[in-house]
Image (tube, rainbow, N blue to C red):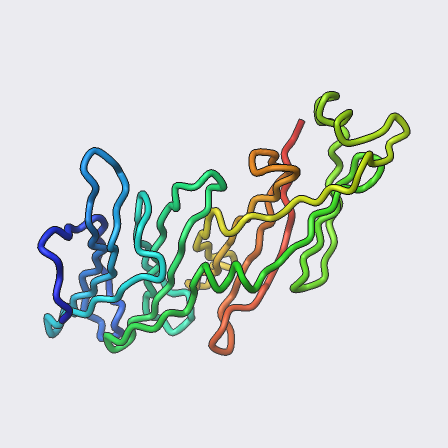
Length: 234
């Protein structure tokens, strides 16, 4: 059992069998609260084995933020619940931190880290002539075209000449994960992970839509099962 600071408190709690022995375990997030602020730091995941009483604590790859939460459910298909930790970064881009752990036999194994995901899935966002924006997903070489012709006239006049050509080259970007949601799409009792990433234009608040990636566990890793781009209506 790891030593805990005296000022750490429980900020999220749930129960369920995550060790695989058919006995319910206690799962907690503990952290240091900040006076007069919702900010929490020094977050750790703590699992208490329901059968033996043994406690294991794990430091998170990102251990500070807002609104930390826990979800447990089978993501790997071994019929044992896994643990998803989600934390709001509090930044203007709406980025969130996500760690997914397997705790079979009370042995922590990090199987999803949002920092690793963000480094792996890269995109190119390029403004094109005729009020279009091209989004290319580098990992699977898929291309998407977003029609921005319904944006307000002032916005478009800043970017395009009267004949629809660009005044100058403009690139946008895709933000890191802003949400990771366990969804059992095929209703087989095993959750897939649905990742949301905001597509931004000239600046962060210039939102053009979202990349939606569905990840499924197979052969000891997550693969990209499905990808879509969602756009805003007008």
